[in-house]
Length: 468
Image (cartoon, rainbow, N blue to C red; front, side):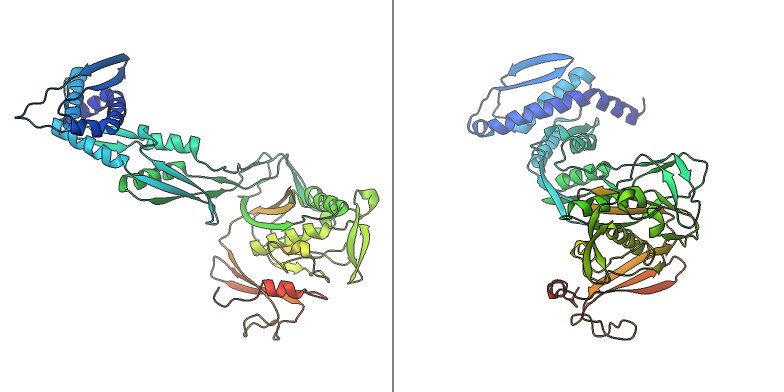
């Protein structure tokens, strides 16, 4: 029989015996070592399981002419047991060296840091082979023996015990497509779900990281949590393209009055959500409203900016939270913007996730419009998580990337930063957007938001730091 086949056969038969023997025997050795070092004779009990339980007590006799170590005695017993069940075994010296190696591995401990996709720490996990002795296994042949870490056992433990919660992903199923009928409407998909970005861990890589750290005696190691994008199943006959997640916009509307809160949710979930933009087409935010913003059309009374500087109650106050969130996704995608204006008054609701990156709309006079300049459809989905508004774009990843720098303010911006050939106005917030295309083209855009007044505290909070 081939030597390697014979070795594999022995390993397959012996693995359960040796793993259990090593665990129980050496744990006992660890707890009794101080007694045994001071006594010339000892009693050592062990139990293993091979189909049925076998217990035995043995009193080895020490001879002055043969001085043996504790590990050598254990190795001799292990060798006898292997021979009994398999008619062959490695040498006592090989087995004794393996037991020495195991005791060294048992002293290793590692702190595993678990990192979020953005690199921040989410949690930590202290692991050692003393805590997880079942991770150790004896690998042997007729001529050698050594303990290794069983990565399958490590993998199983990580999947069951990793002390962090991983956010699940929500996939999308497109059941039907409703095409727009005129310029004052938008095409839409019919779907029961909004795609929600989740998280995932490559558990096999994580298991290798943990095992390698313990084998090498590393005190720290890292496991990374990755972003997991929703999958889209298109059950229609219309080819919508790849529909990869290409951009995200966010805003926060915590603290909104009841009417404003209701309008924000209605605008996002009933009007922006599931909009579809064909290749080369323009998308108008106002077209998503598909009817007057009136009480009889389901909108609530809430504060709006009127005449450029007055706050008054009117139906639909808060719709601009939806247009602002959508605009941030447009900026993230690097799509050309045809129409956009900032609010005339600074709105604190739009501070989080991009102060100064806002878009005011007013049906009939002010709109937010962008062009889908790819050769595939763009699907727009929106959802609300608590008081967090999220807009996702799904479409063709054509290789473009977007760099966004800012915010910049009067008195703290770089000296060479000009807006249309002039310095920043005291009531302006400026961002610089650079879009890099796969064909080598670059496009630079200046996003300027000018308000009637801008709190000094905002300028101070975001003061320019040239070292960043």
